[in-house]
Amino acid sequence: MKKSLYFLCLFLLSGFVSLAQGKPDYSKITLVIHGGAGTITRQNMTPEKEKAYREKLNEALQVGYAVLKKGGTSMDAVEATIHVMEDSPLFNAGKGAVFTNEGKNELDAAVMDGKTLMAGSVASVTTIKNPISAARAVMEKSEHVMMIGSGAEQFAKLQGIELVDPSYFHTETRYNQLQKLKDKEKTQLDHDGGTSSNENIFTEGNKFGTVGAVALDAYGNLAAGTSTGGMTNKRYGRVGDAPIIGAGTYADNNTCAVSATGHGEYFIRSVVAHDIAAMMEYKGYSVKKAADEVVMKKLVERGGEGGVIALDKKGNIAMPFNSAGMYRGYIKNGKAEVAIYKD
Image (cartoon, rainbow, N blue to C red; front, side):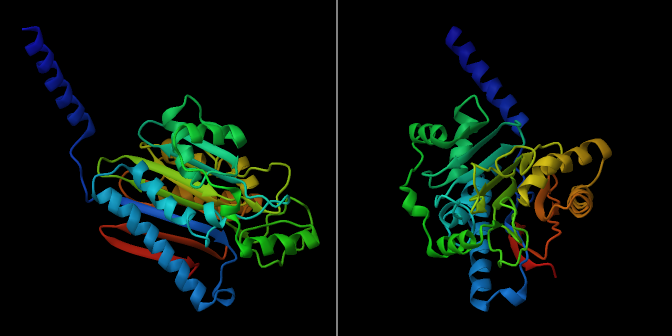
């Protein structure tokens, strides 16, 4: 009798869980990505380089969308998508990370789950192959939100996350960028053409190298993730907005999921990602109106440059940027679109 009652309870519980989860709606699934913003123009882009970027962006979209089509969660899709970009030397994240003034590669990443509002991030790590996975582990397997440096690496090792020798992140292109900048003792973000006249050590230059993804799964849940190598020639353990929840990364099923790329200090001070969600919640703005208000008006007025990708629970997309270009793309209803320039 007790055993029968036990299984009856399990049956009823599973039914309640199914009802709570809801029937999957695969027409909803959407994935949006970015690979950095800045002075990206046709004039400074070779056909070969443009082709490489477009192909890699499309690959990332296809990998993440395949996860969603199989019933995977938005978080699964975000992680898989960002892995593709972290493993490519084209982007300032993972393998393509820029060098610090000390000749190191220091990586940052963050994730947030829109259903639970749980979040995780890592900063200033040097041996984690895919920092986005470490950020997810912090969220799911610890009671914390952020871990940094060697402590984050120790935690990642305990979680079975792949670690690599720091030399894995060494690419000649990034190393040469550092040498040129050290000669002038100025800083810049990923892809800067070296045209900045500001000699201040914290100048971020004309390009902002970060990768990010936001996704909506078949169950209506949102997730966001961002990963970066930071700023070329940065010093003093500087950390930007990417791993800061609410600044460069945010997700809430009630509003939207956001991943940002830009002048980190401005994005932190303006709490850009959360501000977009707040405008939707408190003012009733659409995701496009909220994202445009923050990126094209507030940031511009404060002198901040960059852009965001944002996605709401209905699958509506916003990808505003106030720079010349932003590597970006989305896939919805099986149709993928990739863009680089403002036009």
